[in-house]
Length: 397
Image (cartoon, one colour):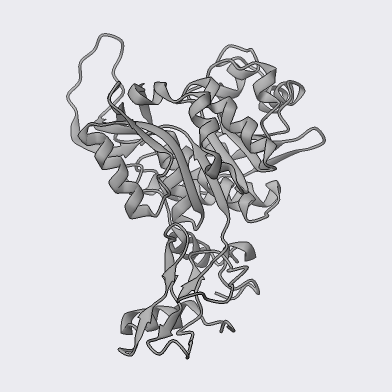
């Protein structure tokens, strides 16, 4: 079967017209992907046609096998996320309250949340095949989570439900003028995710390019995820939030650590707010066993530190509405870039774009960018998107 390259605009026009009546969509063999357009087969099984070539959102198709009974196999970057889900209860305030103070708020809403869940959705929207390993309750909030994953095409085989604890809940206060936020979390069922649970999810670790985890789950579960990823040759990413001190035995399993400045200080054994240069803090973490540190610095961008180099990456200038999802969008962008084979120096500027786009909308899930959002940003800035992010490896959109 020969694939024909076609432009984004041509694809949009064809999608608007829909397939010829004599044809029916191909069935995909793997977990559902986010499809920009699909190949179709003539009802006569002896004649196969491409109308147009199959394209997975944002990523080149690296392999298409000969169809068997109408199936097409696509290979896309696989990312396994081991983390939390928590419903987010959000309210806006004019300013952050002081200790003991009660303020009137506005704009109360209920959102999907949890850093693991958010990052899984972010990766899926950017084109990855995502397996999510998590624990949720049997309550209505848990049902909401499963509905979200079905809509986003995330594999839920390893999302286990328990009646022993409620689904996690997060309370978020957003300062209206600046978009800055404070978050508190009751982990609920997330606390029941164990290292043994992770070890039983064999299929989730079969061939991921990246394993991504956070600290809204027990440290033992995160450690198990990093260890299993390292065993399978995946790039391991730890987003250490909410931060807590970690022993070198865990840090040594981390290929890329993505703390903010205060989180990095805690992991390095310093008090938050200590007047120490970010690079010096990152080098402490390198000496503790972390291979590479990508420290997010808010409006000052990000800092890449390895054992041999240090690189500053500027932030993307955006008008902030709500910064709640910025960190999760940053980590998703970093994961998809590394899963596609980008170097860390290439991946971090891309993550700065995805993180920056997330501050322009309210709520976390609504703000997580998809491929079209990212491509549109590059076009508006008159910049060329990374070739690995384009469906056409030649760099044509």
